[in-house]
Image 1 (cartoon, rainbow over the protein chains, first blue to last red):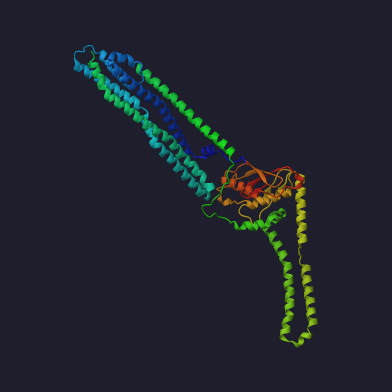
Image 2 (spheres, rainbow over the protein chains, first blue to last red; image 1 turned 120 degrees about the vertical axis):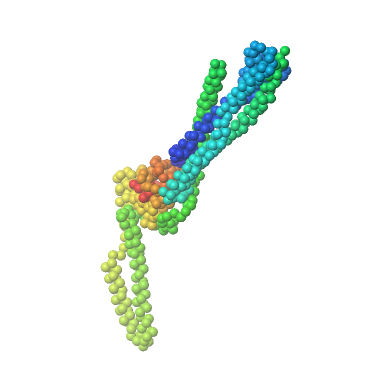
Length: 219
Length: 296
């Protein structure tokens, strides 16, 4: 008996304008958050791996020139970048006799690069938190609105049968489902990224003085 | 300069991911729809159970049984007198009741002679000829009454029915499409007219229309408005009367009406056996359901 409307398509086609608007907002949220997840996942993972590899090499050779040459192979790592900025500042200074001045200048360059790296790492990540926090509420808003409309229709049709009530509630609940579908991956990714970024930032904080000391103690 | 290039590169990469995410979402949506189609093809749809959360307005189901009793009478009666189907029924009832009154009057006649017996015993011997006379008089008066009053016997009703059936048959043969209008005299809010199409005999269509009407649980009070509330349905009937397929050619905006029609058709299966003229092949019959009933 080919008389049934297509489930998901039927729900979307029967939904009211507010519910459709809510669904479109949630869809765009989901698209952007998935793009951020994919983009950041590669970026953060590469940065962490290259930082670890560079750090191992740096402590192995403990020579700034060799370390700088090796850092060219780690273009996406945060620690190699910070080291390179310190090395460039060190080489730019003509007079290396004034050690205090040298330390201050290199430390400032390293800190500036570390800050920039930290900002670069954490960019777009707060959007995931926003989606994770607001998407369920936006979905809930769509649901409440849909149920409100549904009850209004019950009043106007004067029918309280399941056939009259259920479609409206079903349409309304799809908004909550969409909100949760957008929020769950966003929250999971946010937690993962904040954890990974905090590890890199801790490394930057701990090893930046090491880099400065390496430049000053350079024979 | 280098940083600007790097930033632009990162931006491009992010846009690429954005497009990929959009494509992924679209793919997911289409695959969900496709899976639903696939799933609906595999499993048969469950029967819809309609549960009223409050007491529905309108007449109740208690009238159903009386409608069922009406059966073919309810269908055939309105065929010749559409505006007064209940009146027709009432008249039939009266006609059937009248012959029963006759024996009662005769009983009275029998009782009357008993009273004088109780009063005066010696006169009993003299009175028998009077009683017989009185009985004869009474019989005569009763005969006169029955002669003056048009007493439709069951034979007359049968004759009328046969004439109607012949009339319907001749109409069906001439037009090539059967048509029947019927309203259940005891019906609920949805009581109405019948329409059939195709080569099937008109009496059969009328019969199944009445069966569907009896099984149709619908109240037009539950509709917001009746504009455009028409359901065009075709049913495929097997020779053994089982409804093989229900096809909605046109659905009404109200799912309540659509579901009620579907339920009525499902409930009506199996229908009476197909007429012999149809042979062993299955037939398609179409109906138009409106809030007023099954309409031509």
